[in-house]
Image (cartoon, rainbow, N blue to C red; front, top):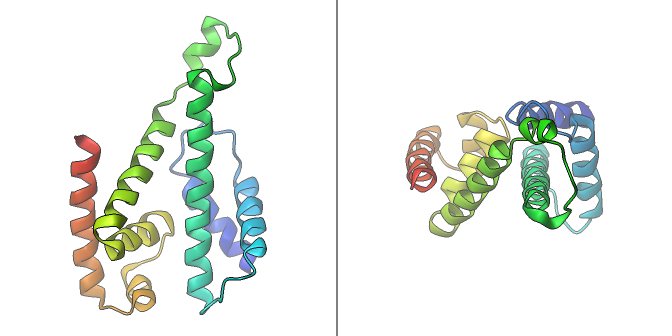
Length: 159
């Protein structure tokens, strides 16, 4: 049951990635599961807490993967490619994910709750009621946080 929910969460994440992404849904689930199991010192509050942490881990894995991929494109693991191969490779989606992660980290420094709302809604696929329950606030507060965070992130990402 847990694996099925993690798989749905990973599919949600991967649906936002570019079509030729080399990381597969199952690999993302397995990596997140390994990290969750290795974090034995976490005191799980409830089922939602577990899945929120799983969503954060999946986001972290994808961002680390994107940063690694961008580093390799900048010469970190240099290799010759033909012009045809170079035309197929696009770093745009990886760069967007890294930029979004940087903006979310900046938002967390300004307003941690808004950052959590974005993370749970955008990356975790939770609805406003679920987020409100986890954060112990009203659904209206979550809705206001979501709108404000989107506007703030838009300003960060377009500047």
